[in-house]
Length: 291
Image (cartoon, rainbow, N blue to C red; front, side, top):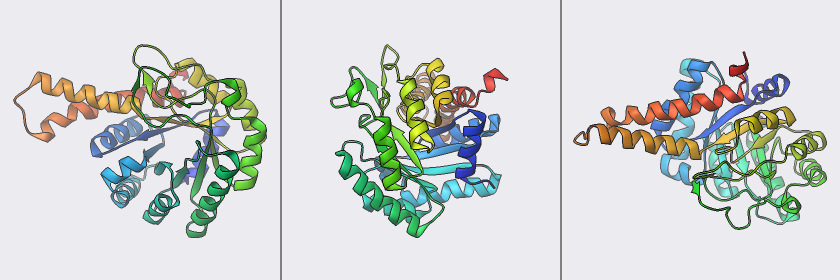
């Protein structure tokens, strides 16, 4: 079985990106995994601190490990937007494949200091684990937006600077970097998200020299995804679209049979909607539509 590092390297070489999809429970996981199997693609499952608290950090790690072993499938688990060393330790000790320390709101030097602590700890426990860090504030939650959240880096002067990204990677030793390039968490109700700075992605990739992660993928235009991948993005996070698909599937099932109370008869509609949403994104990221 190839490691996550090897899978990311292959994505870089083929100018594709790996889909990273968040879950809170097994319904979403079923839909996402079905899509990955049908398309024969690797996939990363993410859980934020809140999602881990609901699902159970150890439970999530064991389920993903079991799927990987039972189906011999490249499915990996990431601790997404982890803001404390305590929660990082919980994920590392549970056996996560990667951890994402989110110090995006911290001052630059403090972000370096705390990220370095995370890298040193994680590698001391598992030398093969990948550590991702965030440079720039992208927002705090995956939801339907009416306006840009306060403090999110949208103005050019607030976006991640390529030179700082290079310094950050050098001083912290992170394996992956999530920059602020105009992307935001969540998606707007009736319009696409703001444009992302493609030239900045390319320059950050050139100077920082590590695989780049695009957070806040929900709501970004398809053509911008492809250009971002060409510029240097190797992993793309999708969460809001998965949550929306879950909601739509549940509403559809309950509307069609409002008297039904059996979970296993209601939930397949949500699984199918999540599968369709995931498959659409994975096809795009894997350039399957081009073949």
